[in-house]
Image 1 (spheres, helix red, strand yellow):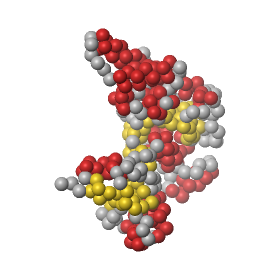
Image 2: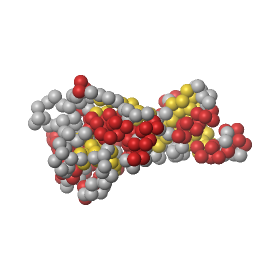
Image 3: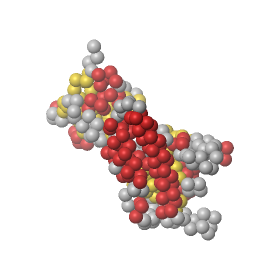
Image 4: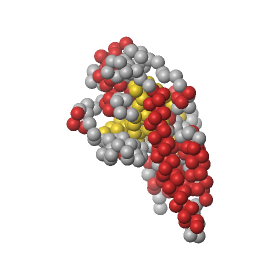
Length: 343
């Protein structure tokens, strides 16, 4: 999972990246793309590692990227860092909500609408070009994919009404649109960059349908460099329940509809990331294509069930380990052992 950090100039994107990643980037990286692969904090992995004492413990990971600024001219069709962000799975839209230079009031609603409108305009231009090519092919007698045209027409109608494609999640995820990587179809987390003493969320109609959160980026950037005890004091003093990294990762998972299942043993305890409603067969494929190909059954027990009885042996004795087939929907916290045979 890769989330791109976008926003208008001076919104604090780089400070947010540093607060999330713990990296000190410096002036030398001003126009460079920045990436950080972060461990997803999960106490369940810690507990399972204590129980099984494996040789290796592997947490789920999430990538945050601050795309490089475009070297194109100011009137380029893909402004700022958007072109380089096209391959991201979702966006974190950083919106300035602090005074700049001591006098300038923040305008979060206008700032959000400005960049979101740019995302939608880029998608609209791409859709219109594709529809023109489809029409030209039709006139030449070439049959196209009717699902693609229908989906593109539906997207265009949304954008004409001033609505982002993400407003229709089923349409945004339609297989016929997968190759387009539309900007406004990507899940979006609006991250308000607040002043140190401001806990308030901006109120505006345009935010009512978005996933929104607050970060005090400058403060939390400084907290990253503190030892754990000192950081805990500052978090408490500024009414922060967890670090910026932990909060944003949790929100990112929720935004993307992601969950974790676990594989355990003496060799390794590992967390695997999947989307909700993933079948046991597809979850097996996340581990290895051979396991999916030779799938027989999945042995499953919920994390809390295992914790309640204290060991796998006791869980088996009590009949808590279930056998599930290909269509079983893996649940968050499931501990799964796949039976498979590759001939």
